[in-house]
Length: 407
Picture 1 (tube, one colour):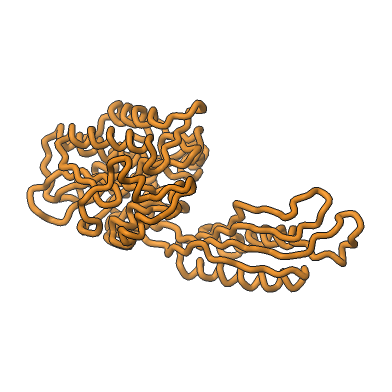
Picture 2: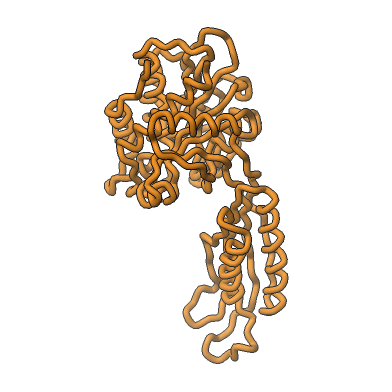
């Protein structure tokens, strides 16, 4: 018997969740362990209970719904997150959790008992916006982040993660690191333009990018913009501009999977008629190949030395983050592709240029990801959109993948 998910249920749950933290522009603001997050958690727990799942809350507030299997084998885990960025959309993260609920309800409706238990997890603070350890919940779930350290993380609003988790009633007792999954599968919108542009329904993710983040502080000398000859300047702004241009050269040199971006920059004294004395900038390097990511770091390091000497400036750098890229498990990638092909959906293999909870899980157990298109590649934006038909395709592939892996 071939079973498929019910599109209307999936879309309705997404719409109901999007009402919590809804913004006037149609977007969603549901920051981790905020009051909005508490209300959303209450709703997800209610949905889990309605499906007769065994609900557990772990020490960092991860919501875990367990559907027992025929035997006490290692569980198959489905997951994602329900927190958003301040100007988020209604699909990022939420699609994976709502599709997980729909998959489990479909199994219930069909009275299918899987060999393995299936767990649905809504991870805490994936975005890392309010509390700047991204993927905090999945890190702790895998035992990579000590609970005491997680509780002490300070928020951008001056709050304390542990205190806020207790305040909203989601500091659970179920021990982190105690679940050892057989495998983990996450459905997510692509957050990029490839599937939409190529009109492909499903992406089977082969690897998740690694990240190298830096802050560069460039020191020059403030002087009059009109009276100081160009050859006598120590212009921190010029050095910053040259670094930004060089980032594109790094990307071009290292191939299509390399990303290199300056997302933030500030000048001091920041006056129209003053040569900048200081520039502070962020540098974001990404690649799904660890050796190439390290190569991009070396290229940047060499260029910073060269440009500082040429411009008469000085540059200090501070490493902000280094996250090792991870490959998805070959068998799960093949299973996702096979499921899509059997269902008649167009599909392709691809790389995830964004990080997800799956990145942490891939360090812990065999992991796979399924992508569905996001219109024009837009994400973290009120305009974020994935059609009901695209959501249905992704959820059906998730369902069939789960059935194949859980037997």
